[in-house]
Image (tube, rainbow, N blue to C red; front, top):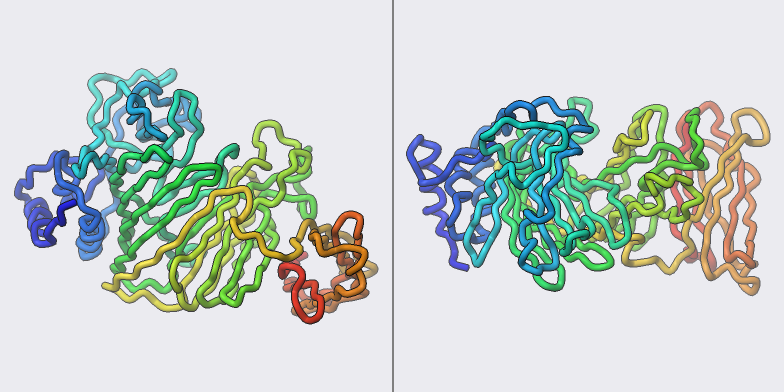
Amino acid sequence: MAFIDRRQLIGGAAAVLGGGSAGAQQMPGAPAFLQAILQDGARFDPEMVAEAARLLSKRAFIPPAAPLPDPFNNLTAETYGAIRHRPERRIWADDNRSMVLEPLHRGFVYAAPVAISLIEDGIVRRVVYDPNRYQFGRLTPSAPLPDMGFSGFRLLAGGENGREIASFQGAAFFRSAARGQGMGALARGLAIKTGDVKGEEFPVFRAFWIDRPTADGVIVIYAIADSESATASFRFTLRANDVTILDTEMTIFARAALDHVGIAPMQASFYFSANRRRSIDDYRPAVHEVNGLQMLNGRGEWIWRPLSNPEQLQISSFMDENPRGFGLIQRERDFAAFNDDDQRYELRPSLWIEPIGDWGAGNVQLIEIPSESEVNDNIIAFWRPKAVLAAGSETPFAYRQFWSWTPPERPPLAQAAGIRIGRGSQGRRRRFLVEFAGDMFTPERAAEFKLNLSATPGQIIAPRLIIASERRSARVLFDLDPGSDNTVELRLLLESGEKPVSETWLYRWTP
């Protein structure tokens, strides 16, 4: 592809910003200078995406705004859900490609417009809104409809009944899944001030440039996200096979100093599990899209932190340097664990992040939000750099996402397979039963394992290690005496000869 000269891009942007004509057709929700590089027929070069984000970051943030005509300005979830893209009008439907694309209609909570363009032989081809793409259910829109733009897009496997591979819709959210799974956890392009007492900032995707998919299921997507404090450019490379792999290359252009930014953010719902239901009255034994935060820290330690639906907001920070991986994981894959024919939580994806390159010092941050409904994404996790991103700075990050059944690298260690909590021997004591599963728990090795168990604060009472060789499991039974404290951090590890034989189990106990 021919390189687009930076001076040409700036010149075209200045013409539009100054009120002159750059020959671009106006597009709903696109910042003025983006019109110059989104126009149909422009030559595409990846450098222009980063340059556009850089230029955008030097101007004040303007929220996307494009009024919706009646009846799309007052849709319910039901009426919006009835808007369907016609299968025969899917992009690439007649090209016999590995994927097809559906531009998603605006409406309901997806009102913000985003520009979508295709890259065809190095040329930008803008996708123009056409009401004939859609079936509107009971809605009867008036004709003719204006160019409303889109709220995002969805990728499906080629063929009339192809599975959903990925979707990008709403603010800077996107999601995917492995073959055979339903959709669950959400990812974000960027998180800013998440969990901050002063309020969160939600970056929004402004524009997408989408290359044609290859025959073996690879597609490249370029994007720009924008918010009050920063803009960001993205290059997503998606590979859809049995596992969906999404490589993300991004650069953050800071408008203001960023001391609370989240890299590779993700979120999902955790309503209740067998070990902690609170007072939830539900026929199902568990309801959750994910049930733990898995981490592989820079020292090579595998960590498992079970999730909870707390009574009060909880924020946990796991300090690290150059992390090797982290993610929200659904370990429960048995239908009987949920007994839900509709939601099929056992089929929801795990989302695992592998940083590319050194990320330096920071922490994996976990936010657990009290929820009274299973539809709320009350679990959020991301990497928070220690260093402040200075105003005017440009900071690159790269990482690989695995939307899968399990993380791609399985540790050669016993894994936490379950937890039960109940009344302890007396007073405020609580009894814990933590089970680990692993092939190392054989009769010949039963005597060599020992506990490494601690509580901060609080006291561990009568710990026991029970090796169930016939089930290849180890069960740890103990009482926790919290004293007068209402928050206790538990840490448990099984060892043999001073070396770990299990992942590190962490748990935050609250009444």
